[in-house]
Length: 99
Image (cartoon, rainbow, N blue to C red; front, side, top):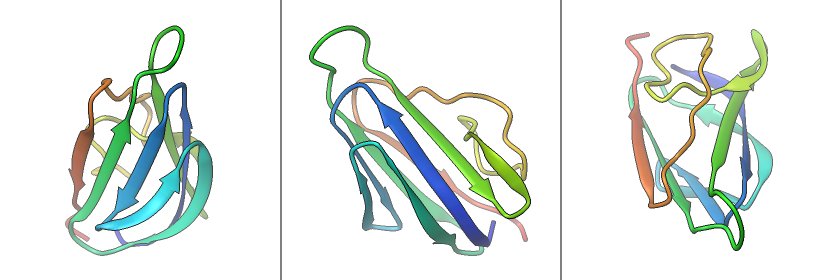
């Protein structure tokens, strides 16, 4: 899925996000990124929250749709509709498109 997107993260613990081997977020925030045609490797690292449950909420937006959750199997679809909560340990997702 090639194009310009905004990636946003909320978390209850320490959180890092990288895209194609490059650091993207170090804690909650929002960044504008360029996704390449074909595979885009997204790596999320999270440490347990000091208190309560640990969670990460990863969302995305483009010029075609508003900020919304990235589904666990994404991004094969243009419009994700499910919230993705990452586990306490590091999580890795390889994203690809046939465009």
